Image 1 (cartoon, rainbow, N blue to C red):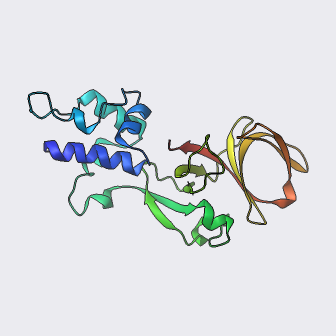
Image 2 (tube, rainbow, N blue to C red):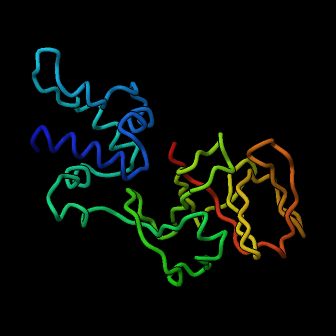
Image 3 (tube, helix red, strand yellow):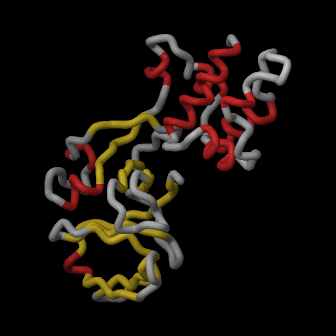
Length: 206
């Protein structure tokens, strides 16, 4: 790979994960300025390549292979090497413009690229500010349809009336789901009969 292609792959990997290059560096445990554009040339004007160690860390934290990273160059066929998962926005679901089905093959959604494309994962775009400052407008939540939900897990509860509840799961009783609000930490009981689906949040962009 050429110098420009390596940095393009870093930028693309950040974008795929809903992050800036700075956010990708922090996610990998690196200094936030590691991938800044100002760090890509030395004071004497010579090109500075990202270190192999830093590349290893972002590849590992994004759960992709070296082959998938190298596919993120500017050739037109690079996207075909990437994984994709179903994608839907918070507003489309809450306003009834899209629906969510337990059988995901029935969900007529677009797809976005994501390094881990297990069949049970999908993306929810929080295009709302109601959960700020905990989740900013534009945060991408990756949800699992099949993961076991335990006390302390963050979940998204899809109600039969199209309401969406993002909360911390406490426990389930015979008739209710006990949760704690992310903003304000108020505890809330939700009747099981009113719930359409409940899925665990496995990752969130920041």
